Length: 296
Image 1 (cartoon, rainbow, N blue to C red):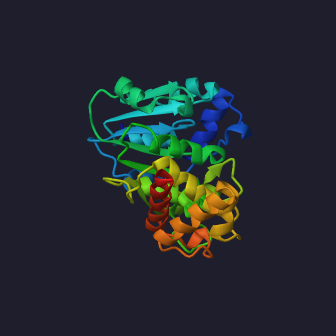
Image 2 (cartoon, helix red, strand yellow; image 1 turned 135 degrees about the vertical axis):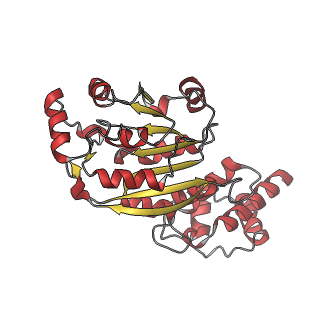
């Protein structure tokens, strides 16, 4: 297998696209990587080996899929663009451990798909070059599903990777940082320059490594309420926590009294901004709000 010519070179990519008469669809955010060393680095970052099953989203013409197939036990790649299915059938023919599924990942029951396609019960990792326009929904689809993904190594717009891995008190920190870090430990592994893609995107990309926590980062009594609170806190970044909470939960006297008591119980100054609160502080506030709402 290792003797196969790499798909991810400018000349081979051009050759494949010409052979199949393929033209890029801007609406699907298609940008193909043409640097095999970066793809190998992605595989190394994910520590993909024969004891790993991999789910890939948006394989394109199979450049990353090929590198994954050379290292993983099995790869299941989900592709939404029907024009790429015959291309993948051609480029991935030498790799019997790859299954290409023509399906929208967001409409896929991930737990069911893993049971259907993976022959062995091994740790599952997600490795993908995610389309920029739909990065967040795809990531949250995996994080909120019943499927226990051990690790995710995903390429995305650098700005989004910075937001996801951001710490409290930084400009990039927000509800997305909290939503992901609640489930996973997040870190930017390395930057991928825009010059190694065809067509070239407007911005650089980053490889984000996410490792599932054994249990969520903080203990909350109601996850839905916790995430509602974090979204409310960042509704308008320049506003104080107090103003944002009133806008989201209500300005009547009873609600204001409930919010005031909850903030006091959690020992949080209402004049602070949402971006200064840690996950633990959001959890304390959410739990206080839930406890007090049950008493009323």
